[in-house]
Length: 127
Image 1 (tube, rainbow, N blue to C red):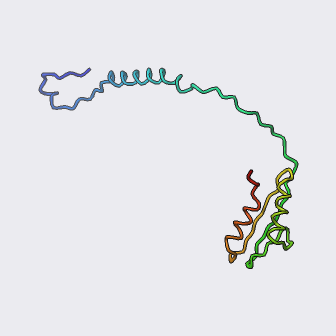
Image 2: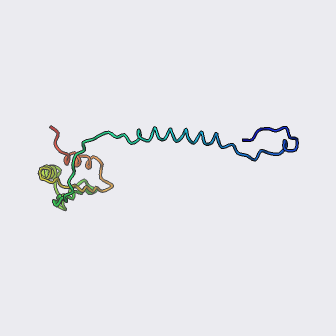
Image 3: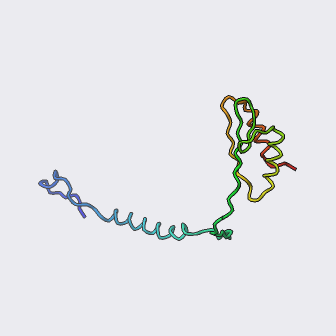
């Protein structure tokens, strides 16, 4: 350890010794803190998760192509139909398993009301 001296020759020289004791004390305190807190971080809640199977779903759902042109005419898989006919067809398709995919395409000039009606017709019935 370096202490002040009464020697005039060395009094103006900078201290070249590094006091390591405070650095070691800080390191040991941090080590104790990490040793105490490390087991607390590994604490986990026991969960009973559902089991999932990795079986491949071989059933591909039917795909229904639904289009609405600029005049508001509805087409289901390329066939022109009225809203009532399309709604009945979507209702029948909704009862099949697996549920079919509905691909809806609408012209940019068509009113959104026609698209909203189609989406309402395709949604499952509310009891």
